[in-house]
Amino acid sequence: MSGNLAVPLIIGIAPSAAERRQLAQLLGGTEAFLIVASVEQAREFLDAAVPRTTTHASTGAAAPDGGEEEARRPPDLRVDSDRRVLRWLDREVELTRLEHDFLHRLLDAPGQVFTYERLHLEVWGNQHLGRGSDIHSVVRRIRRKLAKVEAAATIHSVRGVGFRLSAA
Image (cartoon, rainbow, N blue to C red; front, side, top):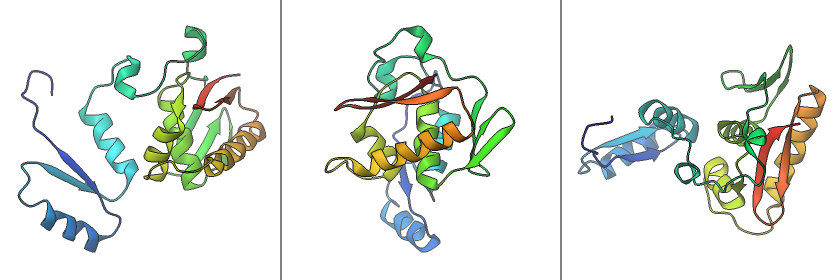
């Protein structure tokens, strides 16, 4: 894509075929649009189409409060999106959709702090409202699953801001 003129692109997310048809009719006059069934499909498209940069501004995440060491991805920690499982070495544990999407997002940029608002928008697909008990519930479950497979990674809470993933 580099070197080309940028063309505005609208990405629409609609889970059912009927909703995708309706969205296509609404966007019919738009120069370029893509309709996908899930946030994950949109992320996959964007990951393939847009090269990642290492600046924090490009991710919208706050800078980590630690050094470079905390920014490293925990080795051998993987999320298998096809099977929706967390893999650590030869161990694995199943993840719910929310756990998968949440952990997948943190693994994209280990060490970076993701705000409650950003996580709510990217994982739940809506605005963050209230005290965040839904986010904290998902984090508790993921922490238990990380412990279950004895992964050398942890999710740190940044009080009043959000969460970050780092090697334990």
